[in-house]
Length: 381
Image 1 (cartoon, rainbow, N blue to C red):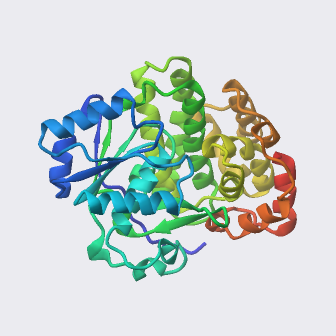
Image 2: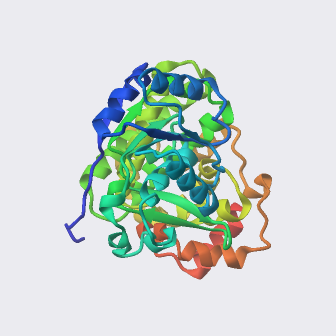
């Protein structure tokens, strides 16, 4: 193992109930005077969004809002967001919502001052250096789900509407300057979103913990993140007003995204193309894929899960963990097969090709090949 790494750890985070009231101060800290709040269509008219705009308005920061964001945001949404940003003469972005609102909000701030197409900044090699760093607008992030952890991420996932391929767009300055994590914003999440987003955070922690790369800080964070999800997701699912459970899940989400600097793996390599082609919910797709991927990786990860299982609250080492994962999914009414989510095998060759080209492949303990990825897709569909 090479004991070498490029590490960047999260940003300023204001965590706690009621802290959405500090949004004007967060904007000031980031140097934003005319923010554009970017969120998804489903959140645009909800009370948490209206109340947040009221807070901004009362502080003299206006009510700038862009909400034309699809569940799997694409370059069309991005172009419309950049146009709205420029038309409103905004000087920064508040990325507000779940993964889609956070990812697109970050990209609006990133692309508002660029002259090249967004695909030129894909997370490949040093492509991020093509960007004009000085033209990237400041970002404040406010998550309203507990899953993706995009509020502490330096990248966004954008779907190419022509090819239906999800691309990861990266730049260090896409990391928000300030994050407000207010668990009260997640209280209204419906059960299926609570489950799907929570299992997304779990997948981030499991894959980071399994990754062969060297990053001991991420390893520790991934371990504690798994423990928090196992303990608190059932409580948040059973009672959406359980604020302690909501807070612990919001922590776990940020931890998962911090930890996966160490790497993701086959779960995400499968999930990204499935979501792009069939428009499935990302976290739920991850959950369906996890048992099969654990089976594939078992020879190389069993020892570390044998050591970790009792700490995270699972009996029986790796074998017990593998059984637990399926039971955990079942407890949240997660389908056992993707066919129950509208996915079929008609495009399996395309899915395999897309999966093998996904950046997540590099963090999988077992090297991914056409044969084993095809077998994985057949198992999960």
